[in-house]
Length: 276
Image 1 (cartoon, rainbow, N blue to C red):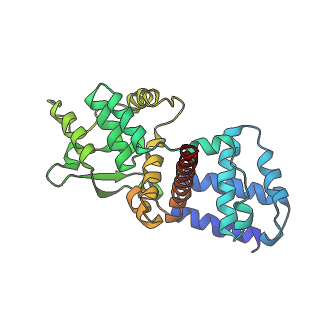
Image 2 (cartoon, rainbow, N blue to C red):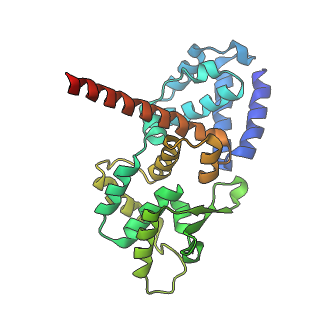
Image 3 (cartoon, helix red, strand yellow):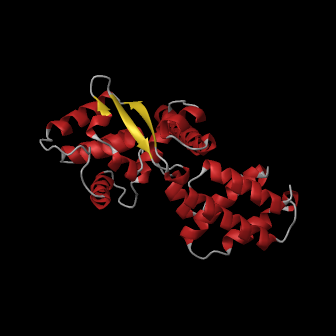
């Protein structure tokens, strides 16, 4: 595929499947990559082009973003052979691939003293919420009889919002009910506080699970990974997390499979040690 034509097609796909800011950032990366490699067709690309381009960015965080955008582009033009060989910079691996298992998350929630704090973390994890989506929740979004919550998703093209309804696990419902029993005010918001307060609550949770360097988004990523561990398909994960493109959910499928494999390996090793 002609690389200049590929950039235009990729940009059109981004406009339909990614937030505007992400689409602009990815386009800048691939345009710069095409200028860097100086080649006309995607069939001519090789790992020297890829690694040389990514290595040219000094900041690790920037390399992570560039690698993610370039990997998407390579898959778009049918160069999975290159995309699959790309190494994950440490920053990218931490931000996009790290996840907490549900047992650790529940322990961290139990360690929080405030019913409000427990409810925020429990809902954000179970529903797979971004921090902005958690703060958009209204008390009326919760249906205690049906055990469901209506979630408003905000990462849509043009800033549009869409809502969908998700069921709560019994343990999440108990935490939410306990929190709502403490609310005597008339504020319709589920969590009537600022984004900064939400971040402080998450920091307390992160310290409780022994991972103070994580960010709020790990809750959403952990939920996706848990769904993959349970055997959900990419389409099912995409529907739960409301991904604009279902292929985004493949990240969770791969991570869930990796974790299951590692767990099986540890069990096998333990059985061998025990029999020895």
